[in-house]
Structures are given as C-alpha cells and as structure tokens.
Image (cartoon, rainbow, N blue to C red; front, side, top):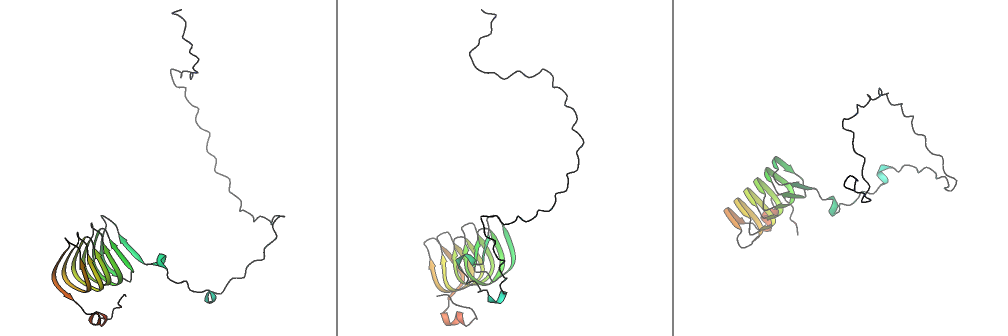
Length: 187
C-alpha cells in the first residue's frame, strides 16, 4: 500500500513538461484591410421617418444666464506655484503659492496651505493661510484663526477669529471711498 498514490478525489492539473517546447515563429503580419465607410442605416419599419430640422439662426437663440455652475473659478492647488497677472475671475482659491497682481476678481479664498504675495483688489476675502502685500477688500475681509495678513490693507468690513493675525498699514475704508476707486461693491 505504500507504493500506491493516495487518491483523495481532488482534481489536479497535469504537470508541466520538464523543458519548454519551442514555439513556432508567428506568421508574417499582414497589413489590416481598409475599413469601408459606414453607410447610414435606413429608417426602421417601426419608426416613422423624421423630417430634418431646419437650423436655427444664431441670433434667435436666447443667451443663457450665468448660473452658479458658470462661475469663473481659478483653483491653484497644493504644491502649485503661479505668478503673473490674474484678471477677471469670479473666485480665486489659493491652496498653493500665488505671486500676482489680481484685478477684477470678486472673491478670494486662501486655504490654510495657501500663500498669496502681491496686490489684490477684490470684493471679499477669507484667509486661512497667508497674504503678503497690498490688499483692498471692498466688502468683508475675514481672517480665520490660522490666517496671517500683512502689508497695506484696506477693507470695508473686518472680522478676525481668535488667533488670526493682521499687521502692517491697516485702514478701514468707508464704502464711498472704496466705491470711488471704480470698483463694484457686493451687497
């Protein structure tokens, strides 16, 4: 009985040959046959044929209204550096580093990891990270507990959480003075 193999009823894979058998070389590759253009399918019997729609004149189409999804938003992500001029954005979110002159922007949000160096003339700002330079906020400047703002600062309204820091030449501006700079004021 010691010479007999134990059969436990478990199927087994056949053993591999000891030496791999050489494979024959692949046949020479033939260039693929060109594909004929696809013909349009005829209408099916179950579907009535549809008349072709006349193209609409471009001037007759109503202009879509700007919705919240159409906001021009620029996000500078973490570990990204951007320098230069930024014009005409609705929202700027700074998670990385920005060295720029910012004009015609409505809102700026500087994340805790974000740094903005330069000048900005905006409607509202919320600072969790750092701002260094010249900042004019026509509306509300909100400095969070982790925020650091330094430089020449002008604002309409100011709110600083406990722990937030503000340093430099800082002045509250009446709405009339800020509006007189040719900027729009958000209400």
